Image 1 (spheres, protein in one colour):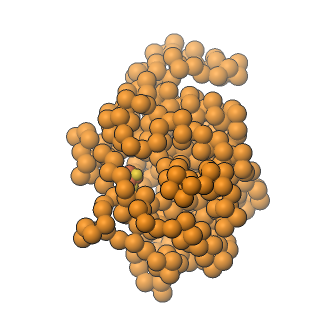
Image 2 (cartoon, helix red, strand yellow; image 1 turned 30 degrees about the vertical axis):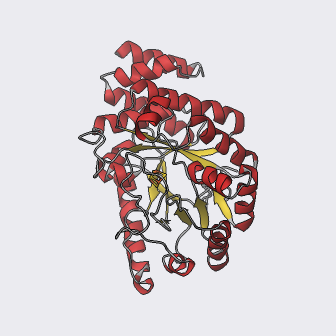
Length: 358
Ligand code: SF4
């Protein structure tokens, strides 16, 4: 074990990239603390003690979806009691000027028109010019392209003109045909996901990338996922952050229990080591929990995301207090991890650097 971490350290010292074999051995390794320390050293070289966060809000304009992915607790069909569709006014009513980012993802709605999506983005941009809009996963972009008979370039260009700043990283789940066939056979696969992100990067739209882990995927499949992302990033340099997301057992129960804390921390640390060309590794505290997220900030992560899951639907009048409270909570979480909080926006502009990744 000591020899594995020593070998990996030597390799990093020589500025060599880690291989798939290294990554697999790291997943199998027992010395979790040693792994975390190594990933933290790499994070420190890039970001020092900084840990990023954003005051953001997630909006899911509808939960009506034409698909029924096996792990999805969110989607429903029209006419079911829990189905909902938001108007643009309702969406605007959930935003306020304190936010720096809005994250929009939703079901693949069978009837909404292309114009509605553009109007939604334009209305947010006009009403809240200071909020950056990060919207639509590659799955939604692919759906828009097919449904509205527009090329992916056209979809993204019109969205950008309407006010879109970035694409979120979801929809990739895990780049494995085996897993895709078992859990979400009608959803796009790895080649299409990667193609859409490649096009977005070419058009100057930065994106994120996620990995959904802790279900039926193997370590090999996780590692393969890292390498597909690293290869595309070598080509485009358009990814801002990588976000490992633990599958939530919920009602879909693809597996009996959520990934362990050890798996969470290993996945964060190994992603920092392998994804040497993606600047930010996110410890998404909403799914990870505050405890693990604060440890993850010492295991290679430099970003906590934001206020996203904390907010309740509330009257616009008292919406500011919870945001302030949540900000305080994130600040104390970061400080208690020994890090220095740095507030950012959707494209990682901070008041100290004045510019983002792009
Ligand atoms: S496409 Fe998205 S919203 Fe629809 S069922 Fe699949 S995961 Fe759920």
